[in-house]
Image (cartoon, rainbow, N blue to C red):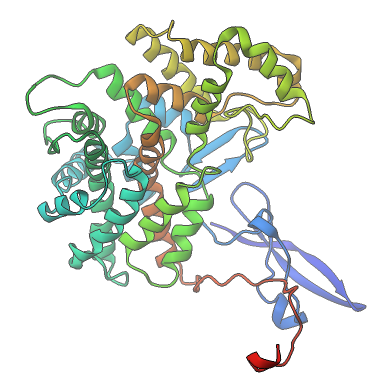
Length: 432
């Protein structure tokens, strides 16, 4: 959807003027095409963290951090979360358009029929310690799927790629629930085809064989919104990892496992867990003023987790949806007086009213609210990033599939600025 702009960028090196075309996107910043820079000049660009580098062309997700905008295939995240459901969002990310009723019914049936996992995968879980972090389990088990589903590992076959995408979306909540049950020492609960995607996930996590009770509809809706809000977020660290792994031709299960490993990092998927740890550190509502002052003190290492965002310089649009869901759920469960949640609500009030936070646009982000919601649902902190990975799977497989189909993509190979020893001769060990 991009084309060449009429303008060129001029770069002068050693008194020689070089010109590079400027590519224009459908919305958002234009980009300078420097793909021939090295062949023209023998020089690279230096961009730690790739903060000023576009690694690909994509039609999936768009973010405007200054205006607080997040679009999936052009649709505002607020509309999708309020009016749609997660499976509808999955279909949109994969196919580029929202499904009509018959397309949705067919997709729903396909995903539902793929939720079971091979029975031998149960043996993998018995090999993990009960206190193993569930993200460690997910890294191993998701990667091992390629040993069970050989008929969907050929990345050059569009049909196999499609089946792999379906399987990953369908099986991720099943594996996540199995990891959770393993930590509790409880038996695995098999998926139920009569339940919605979110309800089925909650039932597999919290159901027990000795009881037969319905999944709470309010909790199910809240979980569905969490999954939608985390489904994709442009070229973030884990998505870029999936694309980089996929650029080598690796099978889709290995690629998604690499994304899970990256997501596990505390600077990426662990932010909502860090929020609750911060609430534990604050301890009481009466201690909030002290910690607010610490947050304002440039010389104090304390940071308020869950406020502000690297990309969003305005209000995180996902946080607006999650805020409403959070308050609805707390009211429904009667948890407004929970000590930790009381701290969170007072922090939210201060952040939205205090001149310091308003001026610096340190608004509560989606991690702040999602951590509160997941705790209210009954999930331990170790499961927060796992839930993130369940929702993000739709984005990962969509980005991976788009990368494979992009004829301009080559194996990822960032370059470096070498600052090591320029060269020296080997000496025998006796002479060192």
